[in-house]
Amino acid sequence: MLEVEGLKKKFKTNVAVNEVNLYLDKGESVGLLGPNGAGKSTTISMISTLIKPTAGKVRYQGKNILKDPNSIRPILGVVPQEIALYELLSAYENVKFFGKIYGLKGKQLEQKIDQVLELVGLQDRKKDLVKTYSGGMKRRINIAVALLHEPEILIMDEPTVGIDPQSRSYILDMVRKLNQEKGMTVLYTSHYMEEVERLCDRVYIMDHGQIIASGTKEELKSILSSEETVLIEVDQTSSAMLDALNELTAIQQVTEAPKGYKLIVSKGANVLADVFSLAETMDIKITSAHVEVPTLEDVFLHLTGRKLRD
Ligand SMILES: Nc1ncnc2c1ncn2[C@@H]1O[C@H](COP(=O)(O)OP(=O)(O)OP(=O)(O)O)[C@@H](O)[C@H]1O
Image (cartoon, rainbow, N blue to C red; front, side, top):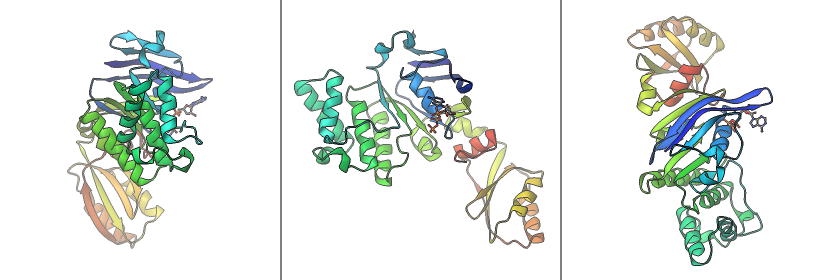
């Protein structure tokens, strides 16, 4: 349905996006997961024709849309990171304003406004001025605006960053429903692994402007099939313990966890015995140790040696 090929964006000497290839099939929910500065916003700004790529193609049903940006705009609903609303107008007036820009009018416009406000759960607050809204409610109005023209593809740029938990959970449920019940195709950008894990069927992992891995969640996790994640908790953490764990050959990666350390170890290696004796020599008590199911965060860590939220 939508294909991105060799997409590249250079800002002076900084290559923000480098040779990105990705595709969306109809009805899919696809995640673009990566840390801050990975190039996610720049990628989706190019797909939605807001900025011009240095190189590359974006095709919708086989046609290069970069040559005719107006053809793709009715198809895409884009929810940007920044809130673009008039604070001194009500939610209703804001949505109406954007509806008119989309060319909607009369009864059809009124119906659409009702529908999208209902969808984002703000129908009962529609007469209130936007300046009285929380950040999460404003984000929901932004989503309502993006849905007004019934786009085929919804593109969201980190829609839950910096908002209250209630709005966050509302937005996540709504995206799931739009995808699963209404068949809307979704491209969901985030640095929150849990959100992508919950919402998306297929995932692209991005770092330093490049797609470093892609596939279904299961395929990505199978990258770690020869490894397992072990979480150990200790009565006191120390940098000496961290260094010593790093020295153990059966341990591939060590990161600090809230009360201890997260270890990525080769499957079958009896690493725990070594870890316990190491702790003993350092007078550290291990209070718990358990093997975890790998997450997309672990895949990212494995591929880059860094955490998503470093
Ligand atoms: N207009 C611009 N001019 C110069 N550099 C830019 C511009 N926009 C983005 N960049 C740079 O491009 C790189 C990728 O930024 P981008 O915003 O696409 O990342 P991101 O993954 O969306 O992260 P974030 O969540 O922080 O927005 C960064 O190094 C950023 O500083």
